[in-house]
Image (tube, rainbow, N blue to C red; front, side, top):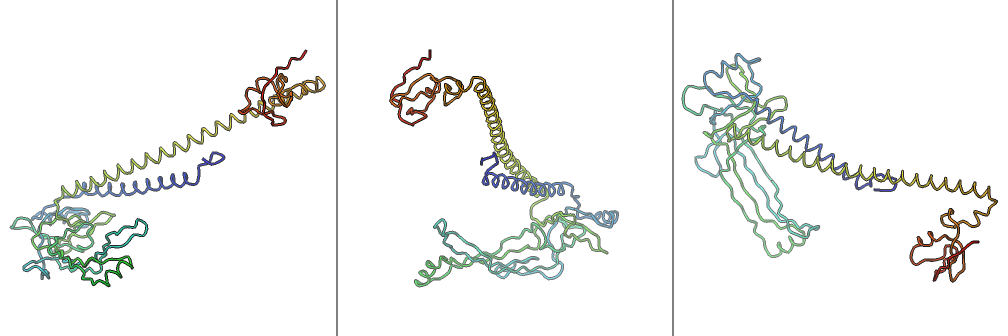
Length: 352
């Protein structure tokens, strides 16, 4: 606490940071909880002959948030892997990632650093078809790259280490960067892969489409089943809830500590004011007595408390200026209040 009972700048900054962090965690928790509630309220539909009838009866031929489980089936041409033979898919992502070591001037350690230097994603139109072969309907998947969770399988991964000469090594140490190599990765959504889609389901002419939902809900295209996806989202919401409670409790504890400090300082100030008022009243009483007795009481009063009579002589200086109680209260080593000379012994004073 600073003078006046106000919190210090550091304490105020920590309290503000704790409050802001708690508010941020609570905002994330609310978002995660809303997404979990959205998944809980999503309508699970099957890819069968009744799906079209359900959409025809729905308002605007639309189910705002629906769950569809099926297998990936291409509509036209498929995408072929550049590295694996006979590997066909509908989404292909090629990534080149640089790996290097960077010298940290603060910790004086080499840290791993990764950076994507090139990434390209290719897509082709595809449907979600029934898991079992038979008479069923297919759902066209729209804008798959907008999905919050798009499950792609890594079909190729290769690391190309960098080749360095001795002058290169010296130069890298001087510059603080040591290249390790390039990571080459290919990911695909294969034809025939089981996929769970969660989004807006609409009937557009004769085509049933699954597209990104509205109202801030998330679009999912995941290889996990719906129950696993729901448990994952609920666990995420619980985690953020616990973090919010933890940081909220810490912030409240800090606030309670500061308020307690301020309250104690307020009590001390009140006590000091009370003592000052008592001292002022004692001075007024003494002045009245001086005026009534013609100054004799003031002459014989202890120079420290101004209330008791002088009752001892300080040696070796010889001053008579204090009562016995105030002499005992003097700090060690005891010195005369008048001349500040050390007191070697005290002789009681008896007035007749």
